[in-house]
Length: 118
Image (cartoon, rainbow, N blue to C red; front, top):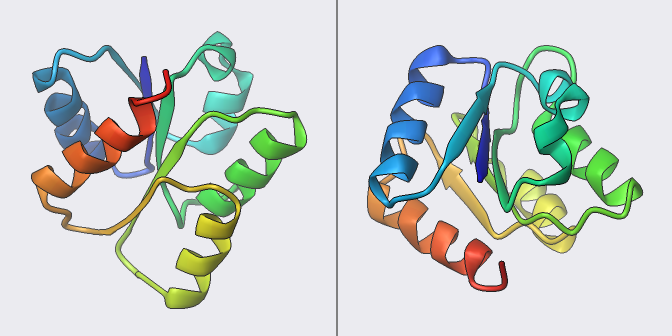
């Protein structure tokens, strides 16, 4: 199951549609906090998350998951691609860092990489 976390409903819907077109199950969340409180937090094979969201950011979500010992692969999407953030999340194990609007093939390549070990 691929968890998709973004405060923008249109992005969540479009991303979920792309992921489902690959035959993968999805679950969407409007916030990182919603994801962390859900049972899916422990069973997601991959997390696609926005970087900037109200409340907990995608970067903070990654840190929280790693602090819990989670090795779940994360793919970041952002409307504000900053090299500093890209380096930070990549060093912490991110599989991808895509600028919105992202190319579907780029997302598919990131998902393939993320799920290769699942």
